[in-house]
Length: 66
Image (cartoon, rainbow, N blue to C red; front, side):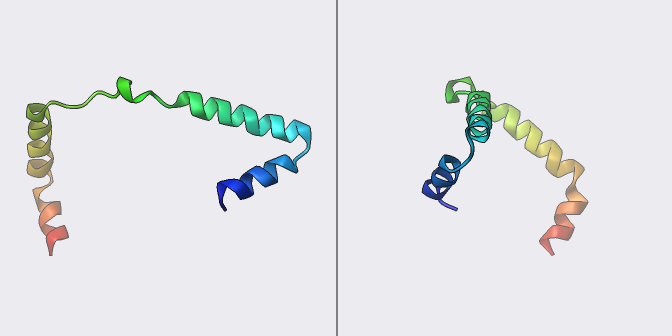
């Protein structure tokens, strides 16, 4: 369903249900963190974590590779 179709459906809802949709959208849109709040791992931390994952799951990765 496209956004235009959703909008048309919402417009046909009773006012009370439109308010529920609006409330849902406001809560959903405000729950996302702005991109500036995203924290990235430094390369050394990533490498350390990746080494640990591959070391601890060596058998699993070997089976998946077959």
